[in-house]
Image 1: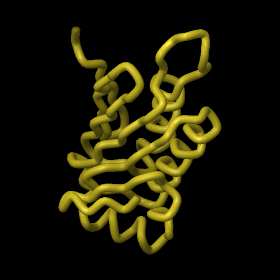
Image 2: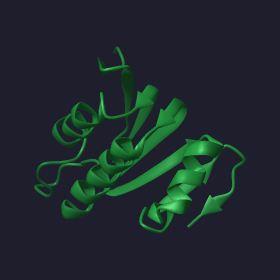
Image 3: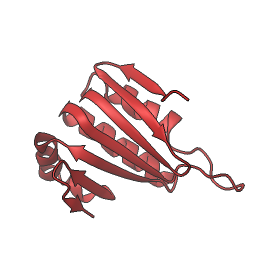
Image 4: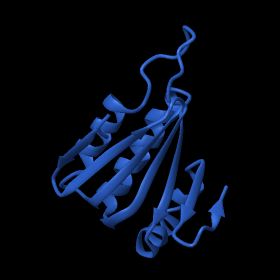
Length: 127
């Protein structure tokens, strides 16, 4: 089965779907050009719409930013919007493999305190 792939505005992502977890592998930049598209696609394609009825649904989303070169302030807003949408639907959102620049921006804006878990390139777990 092919891995679903979506792209727009200098950003592409692929979904690695597991029974209760979806890993979103991102490639490119999360900037003003791609932020709205990114958050809308994650909300519509990844975050579960309903829970229950004995069906396994995504309860955890991992955003893998290892191939993301740049995140601007609008991109940070998109990441926060994805986190908020996940929280509303009882879905944890985790960010992994941020580059040092994005990690510093997250720290400066205190967003590193918002997300459930953040892991850096160096494997430091910030739970």
